Length: 374
Ligand code: SIN
Ligand code: CO
Image (cartoon, rainbow, N blue to C red; front, side, top):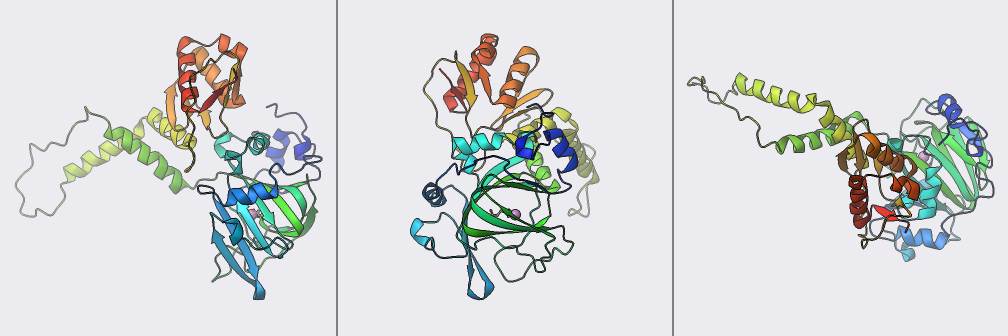
């Protein structure tokens, strides 16, 4: 993607200008970010998706007296309130995994590294529906898909949450600005900006969300993988203590054993390749509930495209796909990086590919990770 071309999606800013001026810094309202936008998934199909096993969905209802009720999916159609009833909303996470059109829409936001892109959530709301004033810990683009939604936003300091309700709703919301979004309009909000979106009539909003893992979470993911890898080392030295003396206090842990463990952990962490491998594998690990349909073997001549559920990234020495890592260098690395960046390879790309690269691509095709355009 050329990051220096002005984009209607970003109100005429280039992706570079947007990242410098707005990303993590200040909101951006874009009127007609996608002119003439209409929902990619009809209401009935979205509500049916909310009822499927393995699709993350929520129903939020505002009840009399300002009480909030939250139910987690799968949500059977008959468990949803009547469409005419005001004040409810259904939120369906990860719709990009289930629909090619929605996946394509999300690709427009790949001026942000893939490692940071999370998913596209669709909310359907009846008149007056919403999730209440709140803040998110990640950036979000809120694209209005159908109907109107009134957004009130503010950079508020007091992030105290209301107690005793099943949602994260701000106790003292103090909006500073207000906008009504029409289909095709989009609002970008940096992390921790307070916001409240209320449907004005029937409404659908698409949220493009980002992954903002905590330090603890990445440490846990990477350390678990490093531990697995360390556990696979068959030549690993075992602890020996030929000079251990007889002890009168057998409960005390020998300091030599502590030193041995410290050294073992340091060695596991010291190998930069192991750490980068573990990170790439964990970033490309498919989401829970994602499975691929193996495909019958076929030719690769006309080009290949990644399945919408496939996650593919790379670093200086590796290519990662769906939680697996491969060392790659030279021409093959260039090819695989192009596949990760563009999510497809043309017939010309394939004509220049090595036998090893073609072999790997056909294995990925068999697994359903990549599809042949033949
Ligand atoms: C919604 O679409 O109703 C909620 C989106 C959000 O506030 O993050
Ligand atoms: Co939000």
